[in-house]
Length: 307
Length: 239
Image: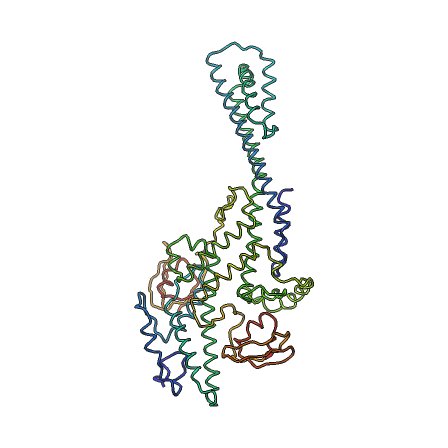
C-alpha cells in the first residue's frame, strides 16, 4: 500500500524521540522510490486525461457541425460500436505510444460523430463529467500519499537535525562513544524532563554502545556534512564575544557554586583550567575544582558531580 | 552605604589597588544611543527581564545590544579585577570566590538570553528572513547565523531526499493541502502571555469592543498581539 513505508518511518521517529538511532537509509530510499513511482503514475494519469478530454471536445464540435449541416447518417451501426471502444481505451492505454494512437483515434471519432443520433450533447457532457470525476479520484489517490511521504521525510530529517544540533551545542564535536543518550536530557528544551530520565537513558546507551560505534556512524554522510557546517556557523557566531568564554553550550543548571567536588569516572588525562593550571584527572580520584572548568566533562559523563 | 554600592551591580566594592580604571573606557566605547538609555547599573537587571520576555514572547524581540555589550565589557573588567587580586591574602581568596560566583551568574544570564534567541531564530528562520522588520531585530551576528543556518538546513533536506523528488515537490515552503499548514513556521501571535504592567498606561484598547485600564503593578493574561506594542515600548513586561 502506498504510504506504508512512510508510516513505518514516522513510527520509528516517534519511538526513538529520546534517543538517537542510526540513520535509516534504506527506508528513506524506498520512500523516495515510492514518491518517484507515484509521481510517474500521476503524470500518466494527467496525460491520459488530456487526451480523453481532447477527444470528447472534438466530438462535441463535430456534433455541432453535423447537426447544423444534417449530413447523411451512414454506416451508423458499425461506427457506433467503434465509438464505444474509443471511450474505453485511452484510460487503459500505456503512455508510451500516444502519438500513433491519437492519430488512429481521430478518424474513428470522426466516423462515430456522424452517428450523432446516438450521442446527444447532454450525453457528451455527462460523459465528460464522469471522466473528470474518475480522473480526480485516481489522481488524488496517488497525489496525497506523495504529499504525505514528503511530510514524513521532512519531519524525520528535522527531528534528526534537532538532535544533531543538541550534540553540537553540548559537545562541540562528535563524541567517540555513544554517550549522547545523555544529551537529550541536558539540552535546553528538555531541562524539565531531566529528572528520572537518567536510568532510561543509560539503558538505551547500553544497547547502542554495545557495537562500540562512534556517534559519527549514526549519522548519514549528509548529516555529517550538516554537523560540520553547523559547527562552523556556530563558531563564527561565538567568535563575536572574543576572549570571553561564555560557555554557551552549557545550560544545564544555574550556577550555585563556583567550586565543586567531582569524582572522575573515566580517565581524561590532563586538562588546563581557565587560570592556566594543569589538572590531572585520573579515574576514581576526587577533585575540588572550578565548576566552569569541568562542566563540559560532566555533561559528557567523564566526571560525576559529588558535592 | 549608598555611595559605596551604587557604582556597579556586581562589583562589590573597589578592592584596594584597583581604582576602577575601566569606567571611562566603558562609557566612551558605548556608541551614541538611538533608543532609551539603560542605566549601566541596571544592565543585569535589564537583561534578566529581557531574557524572561524573550522566553515568554512567541516572536523574537529586538536585540538588547546595549545591555549585552555593556555586560560583556563589565565581565572583561571584572576578569581584570580578579587577575589583580593578591592570591596570598586570605581575604582576597574569599573575595575571589565571591567575584567568580558573581561572574558565573552574569554569564549564565547572558548565555540564557542568547540561547533563548538562538533557539527562536532557528525555529522561525525562514520567516525572519522574509521580513525586514524581523530581520532588523537581530544582531549582525545573528543575521549571519540565521542566513547560513537556513542555507544549511535547505541544503541538507535537498541532498538527503528532495533532490530525488519530482521538481514540483521540491519546494520547502509550500502550504500543505487544504489545511493551510505552511512549512514555514511562524510565531503564533495570539498566544496567551502573562504580563505585568510597569508604567501607568491608562486605557488600553484590546480590540474594537474591549478596553482595559492598565495601572502599574497589575498582572494580566492577554493575547500577545494585544500588548505587543506595549511590550516593545517597555511599558509592560512578561512573566
